[in-house]
Image (cartoon, rainbow, N blue to C red; front, top):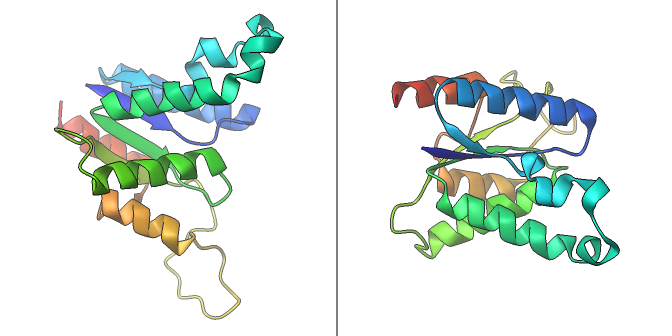
Amino acid sequence: MLIYNGGDMLSLATQDRKAKENAQLRALGFEVWAPQEDKEINDKQNQTEESNNHLAEKIFRHDTEAMMRSDVVIFEVSNNNVGTNVEIGQMAQAMWQNAWYRPPRFFFHSYDIRRTDIPEVGDRRSTSINQYLYGAILSLNSDGIQTWDEIVEELTRWL
């Protein structure tokens, strides 16, 4: 079973967190495709000026192909993660258009420590997810945003 594990990967801290997630999924026996592990794109030492100038197209092609062939797609949700938010919208549109014979199972999680169930009103809210983005998330998984542990627990029931 192939899992696409997408989310923020632009800092050393998020790279480390994604590496730990990927290792955990692999230890459970899943095959994982993770954008930050795509050496053709991320090995900056081996990029030429020409290949670097066409990196956007390559990233789009590689990530989209991986998402479309995955059995499970996991996204880390953040209003600030532009690339992942585009991927979520792209997958919601693909689902809307019935682009799969057998669509993947989608999961969403967030590491934002400000998420809470404590009632908040007016401008005193800790955080919120853009509602269009949340609508796309709900169109793919009615459970919305879960914790990483909840996702792993559900995946282990499939084994």
